Structures are given as structure tokens and as C-alpha cells.
Amino acid sequence: YVDPATILNLGIDKLGIQDIRYAKEKELKLKLLPLAKEIDKQNVVLYVLPKFISKDNILYSVENENNGVLVKAAFADEQFFYGKGAGGHPTGSAVLSDIAALRYGYRYEYKKHLDTNVLTYSTDYELNVYLRYQDEQILDQIQFTHIKERFYGEDFKYVIGRINLQEIIKNRDLIHQDGNFIAEID
Image 1 (cartoon, helix red, strand yellow):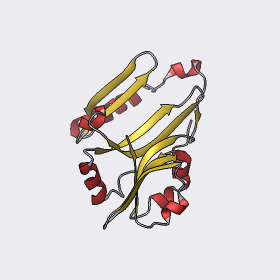
Image 2 (image 1 turned 30 degrees about the vertical axis):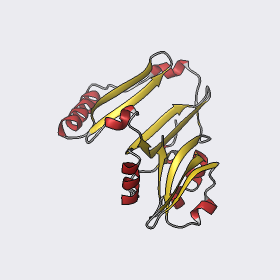
Image 3 (image 1 turned 180 degrees about the vertical axis):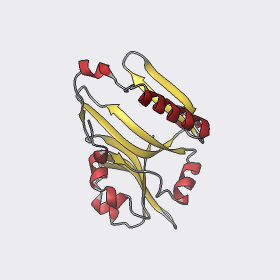
Image 4 (image 1 turned 60 degrees about the horizontal axis):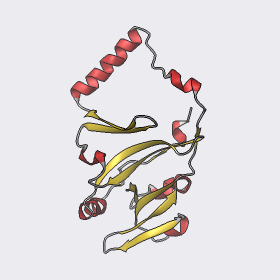
């Protein structure tokens, strides 16, 4: 069990017109994506971040009320599931299914995990990010392992670089202030 409060979960509420313009200029789309990934035989990383994705990413074409899930499995390779995730009919169907499950005492279980090694939640994971910021001092407080690109424009500034997930979590409140926006980038 992982306490949801310990998982990084940053949404798109700080998204600005500058970020949308950046995406258009680079022919990218911005999606809010969760990640659950086994990083080695003992550790798993979990987080939710906006992500700029390119045209060659299968999630690029997922739009509006639709959801897409990309699953990579040891023996099944990659599988992609696509379908309605919002709206009256999908929501009604999910609620009805849950009510029926409660009525018949059905419980959702996944018993295969009992036969496997226990994975540990880890935040020691490097990712590529785009960070738009307002105050230059933010770069003195957030430690990037590598900065690939810096941009200073008339109405905004950003950096693109590698950063450890632990550093984002440690500086979550600073990163999530008005005038700042962070997104993972392909």
C-alpha cells in the first residue's frame, strides 16, 4: 500500500497561454498523465504530471472525453486501451456496475500479487521536464541534474532539463506557485 498523499500529483491548473504556445511551436500536445512503472526488480515509481507528447506517441490522438491506457507487460509487450472516460453513458455504466458489485458482495481483487515479490515505492527517478517560471531565483532553489535548454522571452522564461523526482516533491509548493508550470517532456 502506498499512501496517496506521498505520490506527486500536479495538475494543469497552472497552465498558461505561454505553455500552449510552446506546445504549438514544437508540434506537441499536453496531456495529464499518471505513471506507474517498475524501475527495477524491487522498486516502482508513481506520479501524476502534465506531459508534452509528440506525434509519434500513441497517446497523442487521445482527445476530449476519451482515455487511453498504455500497458507494457513482460510477455505481452505493449497494449493500448482506448475508450470513453467521461460523459453520461460511461459514468452511468461505471456507477451501475459498482452498485451491482456492492449488491452481490463482489470485491475487486488481484490475487496474483500474493505470489510475487513486494515492490517498494521509490522517488529516486530521473525525468525530463519543462519548467516555466516567473522568478529567476527558483533556479537557485531547484537542483537540476542537467539543463538542456534555457529560454528568456519577453513574457516568460523556461528551462528544459533532467531532474530527480525527489527534487520535484521536495519543492512541490515552490513549483506549484502562480507563474510557474512544470510538465514532463518526451
